[in-house]
Each structure stands twice: as C-alpha cells, then as structure tokens.
Length: 361
Ligand SMILES: *Cc1c(COP(=O)(O)O)cnc(C)c1O
Picture 1: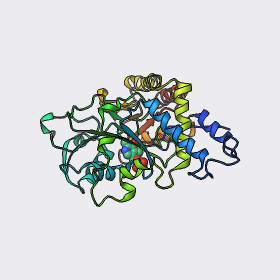
Picture 2: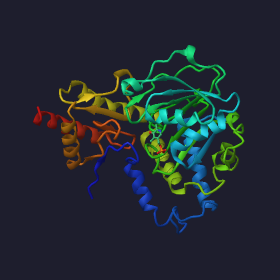
Picture 3: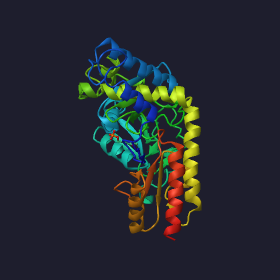
Picture 4: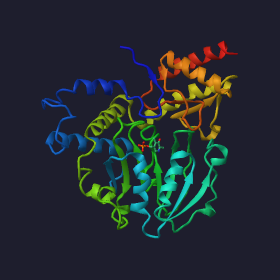
C-alpha cells in the first residue's frame, strides 16, 4: 500500500493511527457487533461516543463551562446564516471584516438579515494580508463582530485579535481549529467545519457562550436554532454519527499521542518553518502572503509563471505530493499542512521543490 502526501485544503489528511483504529473497529465497535456507521444514535453505545467526543473537545480546547459545544451539520457555510439569525437580534447590527473569500461570503449572507457593516477588507490586495483595523469604525452597539481566523485560500492568519470590548467576537476557525491553543473566553462564538483538522466532512462544530443562545429571530428554522441543538445535546435529530466518532479518535490522538495543543502548535510551527524557510531563500518560488500574517496551516506560493506553476503541480502529483494546486480562484500553489501532515511529508516536499528549482533554473 502506498499512501500519498495529501496537501489538500479540505477534506484533508487524517492521522494514520486514527484511520487504522477506525479500520480495526469498522465491523465490530467494542464488542457491539456493529459498525459505528450502522448503530442507532439513540443507543447507549453511541450515546457514550458523542458524550466522550464532547468531553474530549472541552478538555483539549479548555472550553469553560459557560460555553455549549454543538455538533451540527450543514458545514461552516451554514453558520454564515445561523450566526446572524441567532445573534443579530438585540440591535440588529453586526460588524464584519472581509479577509478572504469565506469571510466575504459570511458578510454577504449576514446582510440579508440586518444592518451589517464592513469594517475593513484586503480585497484590493488580493487578500494577501490581514486588513488593518481602525477601532473608531467598530460599532459599540453591534450584536457581534465577525472574523475568519485563518484564511484557507490565501494562507493568512490573524495573529492578534481585534479588541471589541463588550461586543462578542465571532470567529470562523474551520482551517485552524485544534492547530494550537485558543483562548475561548475571548470569543462569544467559534465555529468550524470538521473536514480540515478534525474529522471527515459532515460535522460542523459550534462553541457558543450560553448567554448568546435563545435570542433567535422569529423566522429561524427549528434546525437553525442554536437553542434547539443546545437543549437536545446535539441530538434533536440524527447527528453526523460517524464524523463525530472520528472526531473522538482525532481528539484522543491529539491528547494522548501528540500531548495536547501546545505540543500540536510546536509541531505545526516547526513544519511551517521548514517550508517558509525554503520559500524565503528560493529564487524560483515566491510565498504570496505577507510575512507577518502567514498561516501555519495553508502555505501559498507561485513561480510567477502560470505554465511553470502547472508543470510543478503535475510533477509534484506524479511524485506523490497531491492536491498542491492553489484554489481555483487564485491559481499558483497551496500546500495545506494540517495537523495530520507528518513533518516527513514537508521535508520530502522541500527536497522535491529544491530539485525542481535546479532543473528549471
Ligand atoms: C472550508 C472553509 C469553509 C467552508 O466550509 P464548508 O464546511 O464547506 O461549508 C468556511 N470557512 C473556512 C475558513 C474554511 O476553511
């Protein structure tokens, strides 16, 4: 069996020990005689899985008791709607920063539901940096302030959070969740699609401060109401059973094999440094994100020549480094190096890029 190094932005690699454990348990989960794919979500054996997953997420992310953890479906994109429907209800106002494509979509969607202000955007600079903010533009009576913490397509990240005072900060953390510790108390709400760092696609995680639940707009569909899901422990209807189970295995891997999020961060920073150090000295490949705003999860680069980019992507694919092509809207290359990408994969990629550079000088 030959496994490739998969640099996909999502769905993406999962840790090999997790995949092996899931394979071992595929036909008979812990003596139940069934696969987790087959079992009733109301059965005691599944109830333990979802409870354990939630408890583990609380432990690994150090989530305070006054926050609810919700396991939903619909992807991060559904949160672009759920956040305003549930939170933009006291003054009907919210502030947004557009630092990439997903946060722009979140802003566009929120506009359907209230008075939404675009505080800043880096669109004119092709989103290659996190926009500077003028706190005078922030509205003190906004119901929340929305950012996307790690911009998956452009490879940038907020390294310092905006100070929004009493206005709850809401963040899309789809592509950086579990990559490093995060101080949950600084946020009113965090959300993430699972398919980048947590589990197979199908699970969406929401971490929301309790006082923000229960103020939804009257038109809010039952399934889009955080209260419905909070009151029913994410089991109002059938939850994404298998991804939740995989999430539990990934969290066990982070806690027991990696040693927690501080260790995860060290690993991820070391991995990203290998790649950025190479890019910074390369005469062929150029990193595209502003240095101070670089992501440690998505590393974007170009040669400056579209044909050469295509040649590189093809050669990389043939050498077992797959999905390294940049997002269709920006081109170039993007190496997504989430938690599950082993350091060895990056060492080998760098050696491959070095060879490619010499051959194409
Ligand atoms: C992938 C991604 C999304 C979209 O997630 P879906 O689960 O496909 O809806 C949104 N935001 C960010 C930051 C992402 O990386």
